[in-house]
Length: 417
Image 1 (tube, rainbow, N blue to C red):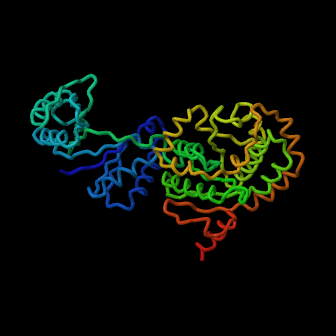
Image 2: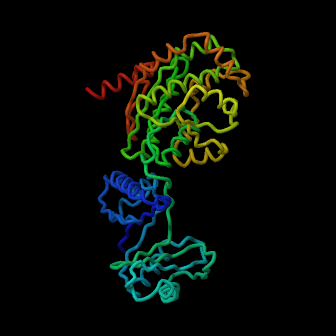
Image 3: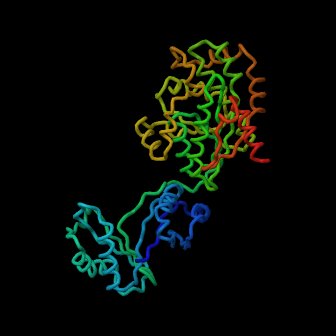
């Protein structure tokens, strides 16, 4: 029996006069994502219908789940818009897809083609009995709280019948919200923050602060692998990762800053560099994985002192989320197993014994004056190296020695030769 995929838009339908722009972006994303497959897409105002080869169904379903702006989609069975055909198809769908041991059901019809001779309610009454009578299993009708709903959508030339709705990524199409720079560490939180920002339509570039050999090169390799996972949620399947050689500033902080203030000052330096680089790439905001109170550096007082060095908006998608919820998303987007690999980045490898939880900016400024950080930031920003990340990139930093920045430079040169 012929099948199609029906895609629904969700929140896009709330965009009023701007809806056309958002829908065009979603159409473009669907086309690009499904380009490897033999498909035909029919774009309508509030729906997309996809003809596909059944052998590709599982792969297409997984790809559609990663596209922001899709609220949900269904595998629909195609029937002629006459009673006998719809009854036969409806019975077949129940037999193929009804969940065991599901016993309660509702059959719901929608008459999209207003020339069809029966109203939606009349159609449901006429076909419900024959469909249930012909099914291999027995069902109880429950029109209020059914375990499953068999949907029948009647259009001019066809009727579409389906039982399941597959949840999409939701949000808005990638790139519709402007460009932002994600501060990506190798931990659990920042990749999830990046994913949630992308769900809201942000076009992300990534920045990572590395301190080899103070930190193991494997910590930067984790960031490469996390970037590869995030890249599949973009429009083109690619992301720019900017690697910051932070070792000199890191050493200066360890040598000159009062121990409880090390993380506070370090993060202030990172924010200064991120803002400076944001201006270069025309990023409108910085995104990070802060969650209030999760660690000492994420109290309100700490966040206030750290972001005082910037004017650019700081976006924190995880700000009120519990760690268990963050981990759940991390597992669902396949970043969790990468993030928990035991290689520390520069914010976690030299943790103070008693980090300050209520820092004062006057003290942060005092400790910063003990070294020429402005000159160091200027020099460090000039040495940032950028690599294009895509889902199947084969970049093993260990193959290029122990300097991450040199490894990136060598890889980029080798790729361009």
